[in-house]
Amino acid sequence: MRRIMFTYFTSNPSSRALCSPMLLSTFSHFSLFHMAANMYVLWSFSSSIVSLLGCEQFIAVYLSAGVISTFVSYVAKMAAGRFEPSLGASGAIMTVLAAVCTKMPEAKLAIILLPMFTFTAGSALKAIIAFDTAGLALGWRLFDHAAHLGGALFGMWYVTYGHELIWKNREPLVKAWHEMRTKNTGKGGGGRSN
Image (tube, rainbow, N blue to C red; front, side):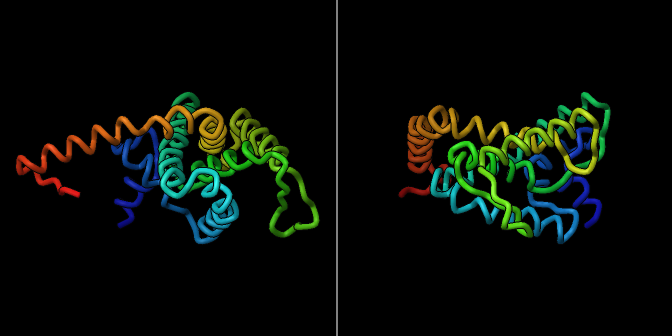
């Protein structure tokens, strides 16, 4: 299992499998603590993002964010000539965090073990972007800073422009898909009729 996990559930621009790990690495974590930290942050922001986007759009954005943040990571690794593998949901979670912080910049946030110190969501987003920019520029290797930045920028873009450009204009594509499936049903194409 180790070889399969490393090949398909870690992202690395020098791997023989490039595309599927862009999504699958979003569901892979290095340790129980890594997974718990990511899932706590996702859980903390999940009700806000679902109320902003709805369940279906949230799932589409989250999965897209995993792929986009991994792509940004690939580009940064290729530019720096560093080919170590990455894994985890943090790029996609940064999309969720950035989307919520962009839509609700005055919301009050706190750190789990320091609830007495509060700050605005807008300030938190600026600090996280500054931290990851510094990490990327200075070559820090603790986190995949490029994936974090890619996720954050995608989240900010999506709630500002993407929702209007993509989600609200999906109807013609869905209608064409439905018509294509309906035509294939009559010809024995294996489709189902509704």
